[in-house]
Image (cartoon, rainbow, N blue to C red; front, side, top):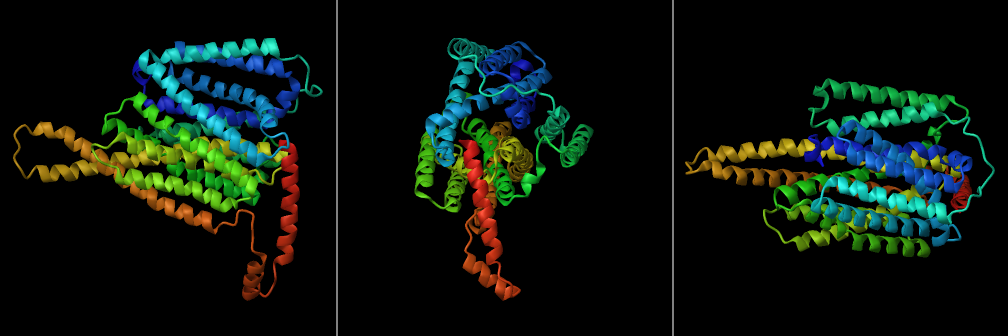
Length: 491
C-alpha cells in the first residue's frame, strides 16, 4: 500500500491511530445517539457509511483523505459496536457478570481481529491492497441488507433530542489527539523536535489538551468528567494501560527482525501473529475461571505481565541470523496469552467502581491511551533508539573491518547491516526486559482493591499513632456501592 501510494509508512500508521481516536471521541455521546435513532436506523446508517468510506480509501491516492476517512470509520464503527454489545453481553452472561463478559468478549474480538489480519494480508499479498477495502465494503453491504430484513423498527426508549451535546468539546478532544498522533508517528522521520512541524503540533496538542480540561471543569454537564480520573482504580488502570505500550510497541521491532534479518514476507509475519490465537483462547479461559473462583486480581495481572516478560526474554536470546520459525510460534502463543489476560484484568479493575455516566468518560480516554498513546509513544522511542543503535553498531563493526584488507569488501556490507540490526534489536529487547522488572515490581506492590487493614493500622500507629481502620472501612463501603451500580449499569 505504501509503495502504491508513493508515501511514507508513517501516513498509514497515522491513519490506523486516527481510527482509534474516532472511536474514543464518540463514546461519551453514544447513549444520546442511541436514544435519538432507532436501532435499525443506526446500524443501517453505520454499515452504509463504513462501506462508502472503505470504497473511498480504495479509490483515493491522497494520504490525508485516508487519515480523515479512517477517523470517520472509527466513529461509525464504535456506534455500531456499542449498539450490538448489550445484545452480545446478554447472550454471554444474562446476569450481567462483567468478569465473565470481558473474558469471553475480549477473546472473541481479539481472535477475530487476528484472523481478519491474516485473511486481509493474504488477500493483499495475492492481489492488490485495494481488494481488501472492496471486500470489506461488500461484507458491510451484506450486513446492511441483513439489518433491513431482520431488524424491527421499534425504539428501545423514548426519543431524545441531540440538543445539549457539547460538540465543541468533542472536536477539541479529537483535534488534540490527532495532533499527538502526528507528533508520535512522524517524530523519528522528522528528527523529533528539530522539525518546526513537530514543534507546532506538540504545542497545539498541549494547548488543546489544556483547553479541553479547563472546559470540562467549567461545564455543568461536561463532555467527559475528568474528575473520574481522581479515583484510584481509574488512575492506576491508566498507568497500567500505558505500561502495556512497553510491550505492544515492540511489534515494529519484531517485524524489523523477521523481515530484515530472517527474510520473512508480510504474509509469513501475519501467520506469526495468527499463532497468538491459542494463547488468546487460553487467556480467555483463564479469565472466566479466575473470576468465577475469585482469583486475586493482582496475581492475575501479574501473570499477564510475566507472559510478556517471557516473550521479551525469549526474543532477546533468539537474536540470530537464522532460527527455526517454530520458536517464534511458541513465543507468539505466550504473547497472545499475556495480552488477553492484561486486556481483561486491567479493564475490569479500572471499571470496577464506576457508574454508567463515569464509565463512559473513562472508557473514552482509556481506550485511546491503551490502543494509541501507549503503543505509539513507545513505538516512536523504540524506532528512534533502534535507528541510533543500528548506526552505532555499524560504525563499531566498520572500525574493525578497516584494519584488514578484503577482496571485494563491498560484499560484506550486507552482512554488516544484518549484524547491526541484530545488535540494535537485541539491545532494545534487553532494555525492555529491564523496564519489565519495574512494571512487575509496581504490580506486586499495588493492592488492587484488597488491603490488609491490620497491617495498615500497625503501620499508622507506628508512624503517627492514629489508626486508619475506620477511614479505610468507610472507603471500602463506598467502593462496594459503586461496584454494585457499575454491575447494574453493565446489565
